[in-house]
Length: 243
Image 1 (spheres, rainbow, N blue to C red):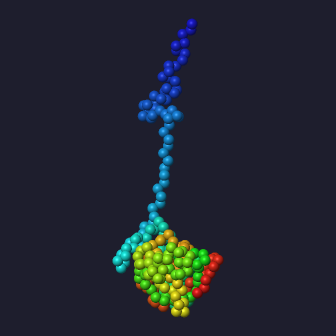
Image 2 (cartoon, helix red, strand yellow):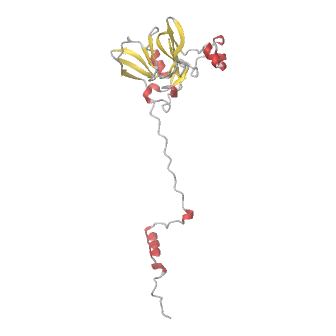
């Protein structure tokens, strides 16, 4: 029988064996069997951090009431209070409510105005026209009108007969209210504060104009009783009430 002991390489000389030895020398582990492979970890992206809160929207104490910092993760930065160029024929001191774009402008004159973000009345409660600031109140009581109570009977405890809702951060009128009058008569509409930053830029209220509390305080200190109010119509709405 022929001696073929030298015709085949030793097991250690097979290419796979040589590769295995090379991996050991280089410190590289051999591949694990496919049935026992470690599952690759998924990378979960961190949610983006909310933008920093401008100092004008920091928490504050006002007449014994605590107003929390504006939650910037819920507040569209397009509605941050700012002074802007604004050409208008309306006299200084006028409030112009740009309903379609969800802004309120306090006219300074000389082509400038302070612009505030607002929430407006939802469809069916929209209105437009000219009016005036009849009076204004700090930390007002909230008294829902009879029509609102008829739609929402659970508001009966806050009726005029029951004295309304006491002032406070959870009061729907917030920290300040400007009462809108036309021809000496209360329209039942208000420009008021709100702690719901998410609602600014939206149509959510029952016809009133809402601002975050820090903004209504800023406006309140600068607007006079009797100041003109001009509310521009949102022509995309199905129901527009002129006052």
